[in-house]
Image (cartoon, rainbow, N blue to C red):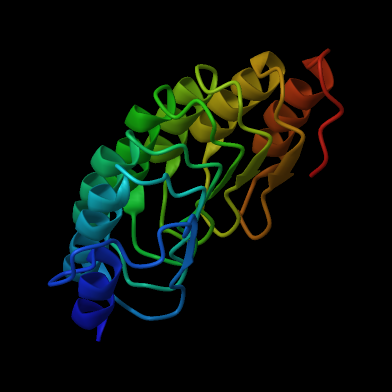
Length: 196
């Protein structure tokens, strides 16, 4: 289970930290849920005095918006470069929590939120926040159904963002009009050649 692993990461009952150089964590495909994520997040935050987590992969873990809020609050003290939360159940509320933290995550280079039941409300909030997260170079949003309002916000953000170079939008059920808004944003960006 996740509890013994979280205890191990914390170094519970020992005088010194376990694996002090650990800066990458991949516990994908374990269905830890929000409660398990809270335990892992607590362990990560206790380790922050020694070192920061750089890469965190939490794909396929049945994480909802409750777990996302806990995670994002604790990650603000870390220097996370890669955050993969794909194939969970974040929804619009979870995406909005991620968006609220983006401007404080100055080292974040890769964010994957694919297949998370995120709608236009979540995408719109994320795109507004994306402009304040200039370090981001990869964004994965595949498998999230996006309507025109989300595509308009995405087009605007893509036109303004100075570094985003890779965007994944597979299986987003984009209408032709939505595609036009996104492409217009990509073409308007004078800083980076974007790859979709």
